[in-house]
Length: 322
Image (cartoon, rainbow, N blue to C red):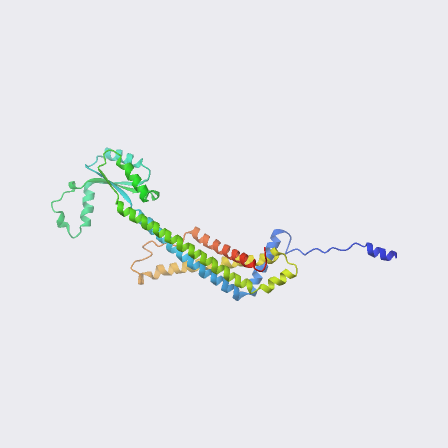
């Protein structure tokens, strides 16, 4: 009887869950990362297809970005032609030039001022009539006015800003006439705004398409391993324990796909620079064709990683409710 009581009163042993590759956040992170890499090694074909799809989708987006960046650069160069020309009835003395230059510079928006005397204006006029110089026989430089050519800052090249600048310039005493090619400026800015609108619409459509493609591709990879998810849930795995390796796997897939897409884009860019002269009428290298800025490249790589992560997250909801 006493022996039975002692056995009954004996304390029961408690079993602790083994630690995940070490204590703390670092240990769990290493464990989940090793699981994700192991899953990739065990399902090489599926992961290659997923990474290839992400690469192709992001390559299309990056090509669009490359074209957009170069169009913006070209538009920036063209916009430098937006300038205001101020004419005077007489040749200005150095003192008058300095006084008027100071007054014009005081108006917001001035980037550069160049004084054009009559002789320089006449030389320019003759160069434009090259081959027809006989038309200028007997014509003297005094028939042309002197002028200031005013280049505007980038933020003042819009139509409304140019018109406001011209209105302020006209109030300065001593100025005979102000010209800035009103119709050309209006058409140029309308063209730029139209191109930017088209770029935003096409870019938005392409981003939505890429998100859809990547999400569904990752969904297929997870669907192919639904049995593994169900078994892990049946044996008592927590939602986080089951999801974490798959989320890391999606992040790695997105990161790999975006990195490869940037590398392919650079190869296409370099190949186009070296061989474009054989099938286009201009040399892209001399035309100043640019590659994507560093911030765009970093954004593409991070976007790929984020898309892979979100694609896995949304796909897992079908099998493991939040």
